[in-house]
Length: 332
Length: 212
Image (cartoon, rainbow over all chains, first blue to last red; front, side, top):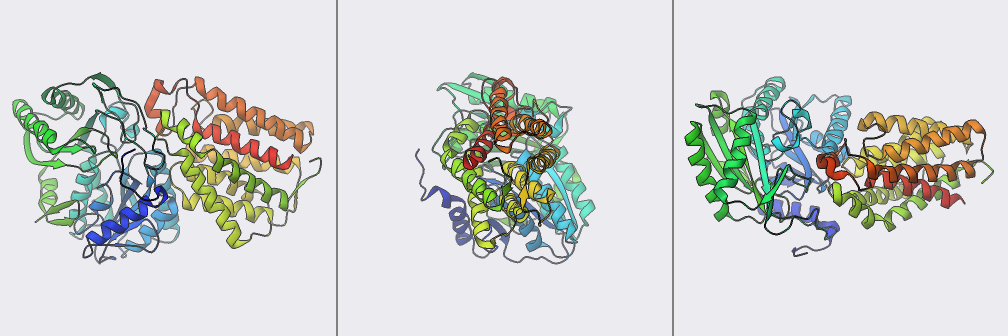
Protein backbone atom coordinates (compact mmCIF):
# COMPACT_ATOMS: atom_id res chain seq x y z
CA UNK A 1 0.00 0.00 0.00
CA UNK A 2 1.34 3.43 -0.93
CA UNK A 3 -0.60 5.91 1.16
CA UNK A 4 0.43 8.81 3.38
CA UNK A 5 -1.57 8.11 6.49
CA UNK A 6 -1.02 7.89 10.24
CA UNK A 7 -3.05 5.38 12.25
CA UNK A 8 -5.73 3.84 10.00
CA UNK A 9 -8.37 4.34 12.68
CA UNK A 10 -7.69 8.09 12.70
CA UNK A 11 -8.09 8.67 8.94
CA UNK A 12 -11.64 10.03 8.86
CA UNK A 13 -11.10 12.41 11.79
CA UNK A 14 -7.78 13.65 10.46
CA UNK A 15 -9.19 14.29 6.99
CA UNK A 16 -11.97 16.39 8.53
CA UNK A 17 -9.61 18.32 10.77
CA UNK A 18 -7.38 19.07 7.79
CA UNK A 19 -10.29 20.16 5.63
CA UNK A 20 -11.60 22.54 8.30
CA UNK A 21 -8.11 23.91 8.96
CA UNK A 22 -7.77 24.72 5.26
CA UNK A 23 -11.20 26.37 5.11
CA UNK A 24 -11.47 28.12 8.45
CA UNK A 25 -13.80 30.84 7.24
CA UNK A 26 -16.24 28.45 5.62
CA UNK A 27 -16.39 25.26 7.61
CA UNK A 28 -16.53 23.84 11.11
CA UNK A 29 -16.81 20.48 12.78
CA UNK A 30 -19.75 19.73 15.03
CA UNK A 31 -18.45 18.45 18.37
CA UNK A 32 -16.64 15.13 18.14
CA UNK A 33 -18.98 13.91 15.44
CA UNK A 34 -17.82 13.13 11.92
CA UNK A 35 -19.85 16.09 10.68
CA UNK A 36 -18.68 19.03 8.58
CA UNK A 37 -20.98 22.08 8.61
CA UNK A 38 -21.10 25.59 7.26
CA UNK A 39 -19.62 28.02 9.71
CA UNK A 40 -22.80 30.14 9.81
CA UNK A 41 -25.38 27.45 10.64
CA UNK A 42 -28.24 27.55 11.38
CA UNK A 43 -28.99 29.72 8.32
CA UNK A 44 -32.28 31.57 8.73
CA UNK A 45 -35.14 31.54 6.18
CA UNK A 46 -33.74 28.55 4.39
CA UNK A 47 -34.45 24.85 4.21
CA UNK A 48 -31.25 23.17 5.36
CA UNK A 49 -29.52 20.57 3.21
CA UNK A 50 -27.71 17.62 4.76
CA UNK A 51 -25.69 15.28 2.59
CA UNK A 52 -23.28 12.51 3.45
CA UNK A 53 -22.15 8.96 2.97
CA UNK A 54 -19.05 6.88 3.32
CA UNK A 55 -15.62 8.54 3.48
CA UNK A 56 -12.79 7.80 1.10
CA UNK A 57 -14.39 9.55 -1.90
CA UNK A 58 -12.95 13.02 -1.27
CA UNK A 59 -13.86 15.68 -2.33
CA UNK A 60 -17.30 14.05 -1.92
CA UNK A 61 -19.14 14.89 0.37
CA UNK A 62 -17.62 17.46 2.68
CA UNK A 63 -16.08 19.71 0.03
CA UNK A 64 -19.61 20.45 -1.17
CA UNK A 65 -20.56 21.98 2.16
CA UNK A 66 -20.59 25.76 1.96
CA UNK A 67 -22.55 28.80 0.85
CA UNK A 68 -25.01 27.90 -1.88
CA UNK A 69 -24.43 24.17 -1.45
CA UNK A 70 -24.99 21.75 1.47
CA UNK A 71 -25.29 23.01 5.05
CA UNK A 72 -23.65 19.91 6.50
CA UNK A 73 -22.27 16.50 5.63
CA UNK A 74 -22.54 13.41 7.83
CA UNK A 75 -19.58 11.18 7.18
CA UNK A 76 -19.12 7.48 7.72
CA UNK A 77 -15.93 5.50 7.90
CA UNK A 78 -14.13 4.60 4.67
CA UNK A 79 -16.72 3.27 2.22
CA UNK A 80 -19.36 2.85 4.93
CA UNK A 81 -22.50 4.88 5.51
CA UNK A 82 -22.56 7.21 8.51
CA UNK A 83 -24.58 5.87 11.42
CA UNK A 84 -28.11 7.11 12.03
CA UNK A 85 -26.80 8.74 15.22
CA UNK A 86 -24.36 10.95 13.30
CA UNK A 87 -26.93 11.88 10.63
CA UNK A 88 -29.41 12.85 13.35
CA UNK A 89 -26.82 15.13 14.96
CA UNK A 90 -26.18 16.80 11.58
CA UNK A 91 -29.91 17.40 11.05
CA UNK A 92 -30.23 18.94 14.51
CA UNK A 93 -27.18 21.16 13.99
CA UNK A 94 -28.41 22.79 10.76
CA UNK A 95 -32.14 22.98 11.49
CA UNK A 96 -33.35 26.60 11.33
CA UNK A 97 -37.10 26.04 11.49
CA UNK A 98 -37.76 25.55 7.77
CA UNK A 99 -36.98 21.85 7.69
CA UNK A 100 -34.12 19.79 6.28
CA UNK A 101 -33.72 18.07 2.92
CA UNK A 102 -31.47 15.01 2.90
CA UNK A 103 -29.57 14.44 -0.35
CA UNK A 104 -27.54 11.25 -0.51
CA UNK A 105 -26.51 8.40 -2.77
CA UNK A 106 -28.43 5.18 -3.29
CA UNK A 107 -26.57 2.53 -1.32
CA UNK A 108 -28.28 0.05 1.00
CA UNK A 109 -26.43 1.26 4.10
CA UNK A 110 -27.01 4.93 3.39
CA UNK A 111 -30.72 4.41 2.76
CA UNK A 112 -31.11 2.43 5.99
CA UNK A 113 -29.26 4.94 8.15
CA UNK A 114 -30.61 8.15 6.58
CA UNK A 115 -34.16 6.81 6.83
CA UNK A 116 -33.66 5.83 10.49
CA UNK A 117 -32.28 9.32 11.19
CA UNK A 118 -35.19 10.91 9.30
CA UNK A 119 -37.68 9.02 11.48
CA UNK A 120 -35.82 9.99 14.67
CA UNK A 121 -35.70 13.66 13.61
CA UNK A 122 -39.41 13.65 12.76
CA UNK A 123 -40.09 12.17 16.21
CA UNK A 124 -38.35 15.25 17.60
CA UNK A 125 -40.64 17.50 15.57
CA UNK A 126 -38.21 18.42 12.78
CA UNK A 127 -39.56 18.48 9.23
CA UNK A 128 -37.33 16.23 7.11
CA UNK A 129 -37.61 15.10 3.50
CA UNK A 130 -35.17 13.20 1.31
CA UNK A 131 -34.09 12.65 -2.26
CA UNK A 132 -31.83 9.77 -3.24
CA UNK A 133 -29.32 10.18 -6.07
CA UNK A 134 -29.27 7.22 -8.50
CA UNK A 135 -27.50 8.38 -11.65
CA UNK A 136 -25.36 5.33 -12.46
CA UNK A 137 -26.72 3.57 -15.54
CA UNK A 138 -24.56 0.48 -14.99
CA UNK A 139 -26.15 -0.70 -11.75
CA UNK A 140 -29.74 -1.28 -12.75
CA UNK A 141 -32.03 -1.60 -15.74
CA UNK A 142 -33.69 1.48 -17.20
CA UNK A 143 -37.06 0.49 -15.74
CA UNK A 144 -35.51 -0.29 -12.35
CA UNK A 145 -33.84 2.99 -11.52
CA UNK A 146 -34.40 2.41 -7.80
CA UNK A 147 -31.61 -0.19 -7.98
CA UNK A 148 -29.10 2.25 -9.40
CA UNK A 149 -26.23 3.66 -7.36
CA UNK A 150 -25.59 7.31 -6.79
CA UNK A 151 -22.27 8.53 -8.14
CA UNK A 152 -20.95 11.72 -9.66
CA UNK A 153 -24.21 13.59 -10.22
CA UNK A 154 -24.25 14.40 -6.51
CA UNK A 155 -22.14 17.60 -6.69
CA UNK A 156 -24.49 18.95 -9.38
CA UNK A 157 -27.59 18.01 -7.37
CA UNK A 158 -26.08 19.76 -4.33
CA UNK A 159 -25.11 22.80 -6.41
CA UNK A 160 -28.58 23.29 -7.86
CA UNK A 161 -30.53 22.38 -4.70
CA UNK A 162 -28.19 24.55 -2.62
CA UNK A 163 -28.87 27.57 -4.82
CA UNK A 164 -32.60 26.89 -4.85
CA UNK A 165 -32.65 26.61 -1.04
CA UNK A 166 -31.22 30.12 -0.78
CA UNK A 167 -34.28 31.57 -2.57
CA UNK A 168 -36.55 30.93 0.43
CA UNK A 169 -38.21 28.05 -1.41
CA UNK A 170 -40.26 25.73 0.81
CA UNK A 171 -39.17 22.17 1.45
CA UNK A 172 -41.66 20.50 -0.92
CA UNK A 173 -40.69 22.72 -3.86
CA UNK A 174 -37.00 22.28 -3.05
CA UNK A 175 -37.41 18.52 -2.98
CA UNK A 176 -39.05 18.68 -6.43
CA UNK A 177 -36.15 20.72 -7.86
CA UNK A 178 -33.57 18.29 -6.43
CA UNK A 179 -35.54 15.34 -7.77
CA UNK A 180 -35.69 16.95 -11.21
CA UNK A 181 -31.88 17.21 -11.30
CA UNK A 182 -31.62 13.54 -10.32
CA UNK A 183 -34.16 12.48 -12.94
CA UNK A 184 -32.21 14.43 -15.58
CA UNK A 185 -28.78 13.01 -14.62
CA UNK A 186 -27.01 9.97 -16.01
CA UNK A 187 -23.47 8.76 -15.25
CA UNK A 188 -21.20 5.93 -16.26
CA UNK A 189 -17.60 5.25 -15.39
CA UNK A 190 -14.74 3.08 -16.49
CA UNK A 191 -12.02 1.71 -14.23
CA UNK A 192 -8.47 0.86 -15.19
CA UNK A 193 -7.23 -0.32 -11.80
CA UNK A 194 -8.43 -1.38 -8.40
CA UNK A 195 -8.36 0.69 -5.23
CA UNK A 196 -6.83 -0.17 -1.87
CA UNK A 197 -8.64 0.09 1.42
CA UNK A 198 -6.41 2.14 3.73
CA UNK A 199 -7.64 0.28 6.81
CA UNK A 200 -6.66 -3.16 5.57
CA UNK A 201 -4.20 -2.47 2.76
CA UNK A 202 -6.18 -4.84 0.58
CA UNK A 203 -7.25 -4.20 -3.00
CA UNK A 204 -11.02 -4.39 -3.31
CA UNK A 205 -10.90 -6.24 -6.61
CA UNK A 206 -8.48 -7.51 -9.23
CA UNK A 207 -8.21 -5.97 -12.67
CA UNK A 208 -5.42 -7.26 -14.86
CA UNK A 209 -3.03 -4.85 -16.52
CA UNK A 210 -4.25 -3.90 -19.97
CA UNK A 211 -7.94 -4.34 -19.11
CA UNK A 212 -10.65 -1.82 -18.32
CA UNK A 213 -14.09 -2.36 -16.85
CA UNK A 214 -17.14 -0.23 -17.58
CA UNK A 215 -19.61 0.37 -14.79
CA UNK A 216 -17.28 -0.57 -11.96
CA UNK A 217 -18.64 0.83 -8.70
CA UNK A 218 -16.99 3.37 -6.43
CA UNK A 219 -16.21 0.60 -3.96
CA UNK A 220 -15.08 -1.94 -6.50
CA UNK A 221 -18.51 -3.40 -7.19
CA UNK A 222 -18.38 -5.43 -10.38
CA UNK A 223 -19.07 -3.59 -13.60
CA UNK A 224 -20.95 -4.56 -16.72
CA UNK A 225 -18.27 -5.03 -19.38
CA UNK A 226 -14.58 -5.88 -19.18
CA UNK A 227 -12.53 -5.18 -22.29
CA UNK A 228 -8.97 -4.52 -23.45
CA UNK A 229 -8.00 -0.91 -22.79
CA UNK A 230 -9.46 1.35 -25.45
CA UNK A 231 -8.29 4.72 -26.68
CA UNK A 232 -9.60 7.80 -24.87
CA UNK A 233 -11.87 8.66 -27.80
CA UNK A 234 -13.33 5.20 -28.03
CA UNK A 235 -13.84 5.12 -24.25
CA UNK A 236 -15.66 8.45 -24.24
CA UNK A 237 -17.86 7.41 -27.15
CA UNK A 238 -18.77 4.08 -25.52
CA UNK A 239 -19.81 5.85 -22.32
CA UNK A 240 -21.70 8.63 -24.11
CA UNK A 241 -23.65 6.16 -26.26
CA UNK A 242 -24.96 4.45 -23.14
CA UNK A 243 -25.82 7.73 -21.40
CA UNK A 244 -27.53 9.24 -24.43
CA UNK A 245 -29.58 6.11 -24.99
CA UNK A 246 -30.60 5.83 -21.35
CA UNK A 247 -32.29 9.17 -20.54
CA UNK A 248 -32.50 9.61 -23.58
CA UNK A 249 -30.68 12.84 -24.40
CA UNK A 250 -32.05 14.25 -27.64
CA UNK A 251 -30.93 16.61 -30.34
CA UNK A 252 -31.40 20.16 -29.08
CA UNK A 253 -31.00 19.27 -25.39
CA UNK A 254 -28.70 21.39 -23.25
CA UNK A 255 -26.51 19.59 -20.73
CA UNK A 256 -23.84 19.92 -18.09
CA UNK A 257 -20.99 17.53 -18.91
CA UNK A 258 -18.98 16.49 -15.87
CA UNK A 259 -15.76 14.56 -16.27
CA UNK A 260 -14.65 12.97 -13.03
CA UNK A 261 -11.31 11.37 -12.24
CA UNK A 262 -11.49 8.41 -9.85
CA UNK A 263 -8.19 9.11 -8.09
CA UNK A 264 -5.06 8.36 -10.08
CA UNK A 265 -6.18 9.39 -13.53
CA UNK A 266 -4.49 12.59 -14.64
CA UNK A 267 -6.00 15.88 -15.74
CA UNK A 268 -4.16 15.27 -18.99
CA UNK A 269 -6.34 12.23 -19.64
CA UNK A 270 -9.49 14.03 -18.46
CA UNK A 271 -8.97 16.84 -20.98
CA UNK A 272 -8.49 14.34 -23.79
CA UNK A 273 -11.84 12.85 -22.76
CA UNK A 274 -13.34 16.35 -22.57
CA UNK A 275 -12.26 17.04 -26.15
CA UNK A 276 -14.03 13.94 -27.43
CA UNK A 277 -17.18 14.64 -25.41
CA UNK A 278 -17.47 18.05 -27.04
CA UNK A 279 -16.86 16.65 -30.52
CA UNK A 280 -19.27 13.75 -30.09
CA UNK A 281 -22.12 15.69 -28.49
CA UNK A 282 -21.86 18.31 -31.20
CA UNK A 283 -22.26 15.55 -33.78
CA UNK A 284 -25.39 14.46 -31.91
CA UNK A 285 -26.76 17.99 -31.74
CA UNK A 286 -26.59 18.08 -27.94
CA UNK A 287 -25.42 21.44 -26.63
CA UNK A 288 -23.00 21.61 -23.71
CA UNK A 289 -24.05 24.46 -21.45
CA UNK A 290 -21.18 23.95 -19.01
CA UNK A 291 -18.26 21.53 -18.60
CA UNK A 292 -16.77 20.51 -15.26
CA UNK A 293 -13.42 18.71 -15.32
CA UNK A 294 -11.65 17.36 -12.26
CA UNK A 295 -12.03 15.08 -9.26
CA UNK A 296 -15.54 15.23 -7.82
CA UNK A 297 -15.97 11.77 -6.42
CA UNK A 298 -12.97 9.50 -6.09
CA UNK A 299 -12.42 5.94 -5.09
CA UNK A 300 -9.03 6.10 -3.40
CA UNK A 301 -6.30 5.57 -6.01
CA UNK A 302 -8.54 3.84 -8.52
CA UNK A 303 -7.67 4.75 -12.10
CA UNK A 304 -10.46 5.70 -14.44
CA UNK A 305 -13.02 8.33 -15.23
CA UNK A 306 -16.74 8.77 -15.13
CA UNK A 307 -18.86 11.02 -17.28
CA UNK A 308 -22.08 12.61 -16.06
CA UNK A 309 -24.59 14.37 -18.26
CA UNK A 310 -27.29 16.52 -16.68
CA UNK A 311 -30.10 17.80 -18.86
CA UNK A 312 -30.99 21.39 -18.07
CA UNK A 313 -34.07 23.55 -18.41
CA UNK A 314 -34.37 27.28 -17.73
CA UNK A 315 -35.10 26.74 -14.03
CA UNK A 316 -32.11 24.45 -13.47
CA UNK A 317 -29.82 26.77 -15.45
CA UNK A 318 -30.81 29.67 -13.23
CA UNK A 319 -29.88 27.82 -10.03
CA UNK A 320 -26.76 26.32 -11.58
CA UNK A 321 -25.48 29.80 -12.49
CA UNK A 322 -26.02 31.31 -9.03
CA UNK A 323 -22.87 31.91 -6.97
CA UNK A 324 -21.65 29.34 -4.47
CA UNK A 325 -18.64 28.98 -2.27
CA UNK A 326 -17.71 25.52 -1.08
CA UNK A 327 -14.15 24.14 -1.02
CA UNK A 328 -14.96 21.75 -3.87
CA UNK A 329 -17.18 23.99 -5.98
CA UNK A 330 -17.00 27.74 -6.42
CA UNK A 331 -18.99 30.00 -8.71
CA UNK A 332 -18.81 33.77 -8.61
CA UNK B 1 -25.83 -25.28 30.92
CA UNK B 2 -28.85 -27.37 31.92
CA UNK B 3 -30.01 -24.34 33.90
CA UNK B 4 -31.45 -21.07 32.66
CA UNK B 5 -29.36 -18.13 31.51
CA UNK B 6 -28.88 -15.27 33.96
CA UNK B 7 -27.46 -11.75 33.70
CA UNK B 8 -23.85 -12.90 34.15
CA UNK B 9 -24.27 -15.38 31.30
CA UNK B 10 -25.42 -12.63 28.93
CA UNK B 11 -22.48 -10.45 29.97
CA UNK B 12 -20.13 -13.35 29.22
CA UNK B 13 -21.88 -13.90 25.89
CA UNK B 14 -21.38 -10.30 24.74
CA UNK B 15 -17.75 -10.27 25.89
CA UNK B 16 -17.18 -13.54 24.05
CA UNK B 17 -18.81 -12.32 20.84
CA UNK B 18 -16.68 -9.18 20.97
CA UNK B 19 -13.52 -11.25 21.35
CA UNK B 20 -14.43 -13.50 18.41
CA UNK B 21 -15.29 -10.56 16.15
CA UNK B 22 -12.07 -8.70 16.99
CA UNK B 23 -10.04 -11.83 16.25
CA UNK B 24 -11.74 -12.41 12.92
CA UNK B 25 -12.12 -8.88 11.56
CA UNK B 26 -9.49 -9.22 8.84
CA UNK B 27 -10.92 -12.54 7.72
CA UNK B 28 -14.39 -10.97 7.50
CA UNK B 29 -12.99 -8.07 5.46
CA UNK B 30 -11.41 -10.53 3.05
CA UNK B 31 -14.72 -12.31 2.55
CA UNK B 32 -16.44 -8.97 2.00
CA UNK B 33 -13.84 -7.64 -0.42
CA UNK B 34 -14.48 -10.36 -2.98
CA UNK B 35 -18.11 -9.43 -3.58
CA UNK B 36 -18.73 -6.44 -1.31
CA UNK B 37 -16.69 -3.41 -0.41
CA UNK B 38 -14.27 -5.02 1.99
CA UNK B 39 -15.25 -3.14 5.10
CA UNK B 40 -17.47 -5.61 6.92
CA UNK B 41 -14.96 -6.89 9.47
CA UNK B 42 -13.64 -3.46 10.47
CA UNK B 43 -17.12 -2.00 10.70
CA UNK B 44 -18.58 -4.75 12.83
CA UNK B 45 -15.53 -4.73 15.11
CA UNK B 46 -15.97 -0.99 15.70
CA UNK B 47 -19.58 -1.61 16.65
CA UNK B 48 -18.65 -4.16 19.29
CA UNK B 49 -15.95 -1.84 20.64
CA UNK B 50 -18.68 0.75 21.14
CA UNK B 51 -21.03 -1.81 22.70
CA UNK B 52 -18.39 -2.84 25.26
CA UNK B 53 -17.63 0.79 26.01
CA UNK B 54 -21.29 1.65 26.53
CA UNK B 55 -21.86 -1.34 28.82
CA UNK B 56 -18.79 -0.34 30.83
CA UNK B 57 -20.00 3.25 31.09
CA UNK B 58 -23.72 2.77 31.75
CA UNK B 59 -23.50 -0.47 33.78
CA UNK B 60 -26.89 -1.92 32.81
CA UNK B 61 -28.28 -3.99 35.68
CA UNK B 62 -30.60 -6.43 33.95
CA UNK B 63 -30.63 -8.63 30.85
CA UNK B 64 -33.02 -6.44 28.88
CA UNK B 65 -31.05 -3.23 29.46
CA UNK B 66 -27.77 -4.99 28.75
CA UNK B 67 -28.92 -6.19 25.33
CA UNK B 68 -30.53 -2.85 24.50
CA UNK B 69 -27.35 -0.98 25.48
CA UNK B 70 -25.21 -3.21 23.27
CA UNK B 71 -27.62 -2.94 20.34
CA UNK B 72 -28.16 0.81 20.46
CA UNK B 73 -24.41 1.43 20.75
CA UNK B 74 -23.89 -0.59 17.57
CA UNK B 75 -26.75 1.20 15.76
CA UNK B 76 -25.70 4.72 16.76
CA UNK B 77 -21.95 4.21 16.31
CA UNK B 78 -21.36 2.25 13.17
CA UNK B 79 -22.96 2.90 9.85
CA UNK B 80 -23.24 0.77 6.79
CA UNK B 81 -25.94 -1.86 6.68
CA UNK B 82 -24.20 -3.62 9.53
CA UNK B 83 -25.09 -0.97 12.12
CA UNK B 84 -28.88 -1.13 11.93
CA UNK B 85 -28.95 -4.87 11.23
CA UNK B 86 -26.45 -6.21 13.75
CA UNK B 87 -27.43 -3.61 16.34
CA UNK B 88 -31.10 -4.58 16.07
CA UNK B 89 -30.13 -8.22 16.58
CA UNK B 90 -29.32 -7.36 20.22
CA UNK B 91 -31.60 -4.41 20.93
CA UNK B 92 -34.68 -6.27 19.67
CA UNK B 93 -33.85 -9.25 21.90
CA UNK B 94 -33.64 -6.84 24.81
CA UNK B 95 -36.86 -5.11 23.86
CA UNK B 96 -38.78 -8.38 23.76
CA UNK B 97 -38.30 -9.11 27.47
CA UNK B 98 -39.19 -6.92 30.41
CA UNK B 99 -36.48 -5.50 32.63
CA UNK B 100 -37.48 -7.65 35.61
CA UNK B 101 -36.71 -10.92 33.86
CA UNK B 102 -33.71 -12.37 35.68
CA UNK B 103 -33.58 -15.79 34.18
CA UNK B 104 -34.10 -16.91 30.58
CA UNK B 105 -35.23 -20.44 29.76
CA UNK B 106 -35.20 -21.98 26.30
CA UNK B 107 -38.73 -20.80 25.50
CA UNK B 108 -37.93 -17.17 26.31
CA UNK B 109 -34.58 -17.40 24.51
CA UNK B 110 -36.33 -18.72 21.45
CA UNK B 111 -38.91 -15.92 21.46
CA UNK B 112 -36.11 -13.34 21.85
CA UNK B 113 -34.29 -14.67 18.79
CA UNK B 114 -37.53 -14.90 16.81
CA UNK B 115 -38.35 -11.25 17.47
CA UNK B 116 -34.83 -10.29 16.47
CA UNK B 117 -35.04 -12.21 13.20
CA UNK B 118 -38.38 -10.66 12.34
CA UNK B 119 -37.07 -7.13 12.99
CA UNK B 120 -33.94 -7.68 10.90
CA UNK B 121 -35.84 -9.09 7.94
CA UNK B 122 -38.21 -6.14 8.05
CA UNK B 123 -35.39 -3.56 8.27
CA UNK B 124 -33.14 -4.98 5.58
CA UNK B 125 -35.89 -6.41 3.38
CA UNK B 126 -33.88 -9.59 2.86
CA UNK B 127 -35.41 -13.06 2.56
CA UNK B 128 -33.64 -16.41 2.81
CA UNK B 129 -31.86 -17.01 -0.49
CA UNK B 130 -30.82 -13.39 -1.03
CA UNK B 131 -27.25 -14.13 0.11
CA UNK B 132 -27.23 -12.08 3.31
CA UNK B 133 -26.80 -12.67 7.03
CA UNK B 134 -30.44 -13.82 7.02
CA UNK B 135 -29.31 -17.04 5.31
CA UNK B 136 -27.40 -17.99 8.45
CA UNK B 137 -29.70 -16.36 11.01
CA UNK B 138 -33.00 -17.68 9.68
CA UNK B 139 -32.14 -21.42 9.89
CA UNK B 140 -30.43 -20.84 13.25
CA UNK B 141 -33.51 -19.22 14.75
CA UNK B 142 -35.82 -21.82 13.19
CA UNK B 143 -33.65 -24.56 14.72
CA UNK B 144 -33.90 -22.86 18.12
CA UNK B 145 -37.68 -22.66 17.79
CA UNK B 146 -37.80 -26.41 17.00
CA UNK B 147 -35.53 -27.16 19.94
CA UNK B 148 -37.72 -25.11 22.25
CA UNK B 149 -40.81 -26.99 21.06
CA UNK B 150 -39.03 -30.30 21.61
CA UNK B 151 -38.00 -29.24 25.11
CA UNK B 152 -34.26 -29.56 24.52
CA UNK B 153 -31.69 -28.15 26.95
CA UNK B 154 -30.19 -24.75 26.12
CA UNK B 155 -26.84 -26.39 25.53
CA UNK B 156 -28.18 -28.88 23.00
CA UNK B 157 -30.28 -26.19 21.35
CA UNK B 158 -27.29 -23.86 20.96
CA UNK B 159 -25.20 -26.67 19.59
CA UNK B 160 -27.84 -27.24 16.91
CA UNK B 161 -27.98 -23.49 16.26
CA UNK B 162 -24.23 -23.40 15.60
CA UNK B 163 -24.59 -26.18 13.04
CA UNK B 164 -27.62 -24.55 11.42
CA UNK B 165 -25.87 -21.19 11.11
CA UNK B 166 -22.72 -22.79 9.74
CA UNK B 167 -24.68 -24.70 7.12
CA UNK B 168 -26.64 -21.53 6.36
CA UNK B 169 -23.48 -19.44 5.95
CA UNK B 170 -21.91 -22.14 3.74
CA UNK B 171 -25.03 -22.28 1.60
CA UNK B 172 -24.53 -18.63 0.59
CA UNK B 173 -21.63 -19.80 -1.59
CA UNK B 174 -24.14 -21.18 -4.07
CA UNK B 175 -26.32 -18.08 -4.08
CA UNK B 176 -26.43 -15.01 -6.27
CA UNK B 177 -26.59 -11.89 -4.14
CA UNK B 178 -29.89 -10.05 -4.36
CA UNK B 179 -29.63 -7.54 -1.51
CA UNK B 180 -27.20 -4.92 -0.35
CA UNK B 181 -23.97 -3.88 -1.92
CA UNK B 182 -22.82 -7.34 -2.98
CA UNK B 183 -25.93 -7.61 -5.16
CA UNK B 184 -24.13 -5.28 -7.56
CA UNK B 185 -21.76 -8.11 -8.37
CA UNK B 186 -24.64 -10.28 -9.59
CA UNK B 187 -23.54 -13.68 -10.85
CA UNK B 188 -19.99 -12.87 -9.92
CA UNK B 189 -21.06 -13.39 -6.30
CA UNK B 190 -21.49 -17.13 -7.00
CA UNK B 191 -18.87 -19.26 -5.27
CA UNK B 192 -18.17 -16.81 -2.45
CA UNK B 193 -19.52 -16.91 1.07
CA UNK B 194 -21.44 -13.90 2.36
CA UNK B 195 -19.51 -12.03 5.05
CA UNK B 196 -22.59 -11.10 7.08
CA UNK B 197 -23.79 -14.69 7.15
CA UNK B 198 -20.37 -15.72 8.35
CA UNK B 199 -20.51 -13.13 11.13
CA UNK B 200 -23.79 -14.67 12.33
CA UNK B 201 -22.06 -18.05 12.45
CA UNK B 202 -19.21 -16.51 14.50
CA UNK B 203 -21.69 -14.84 16.87
CA UNK B 204 -23.69 -18.00 17.52
CA UNK B 205 -20.55 -20.10 17.85
CA UNK B 206 -19.19 -17.58 20.37
CA UNK B 207 -22.40 -17.79 22.41
CA UNK B 208 -22.16 -21.58 22.51
CA UNK B 209 -18.47 -21.66 23.40
CA UNK B 210 -18.81 -18.96 26.05
CA UNK B 211 -21.50 -20.95 27.86
CA UNK B 212 -19.93 -24.36 27.45
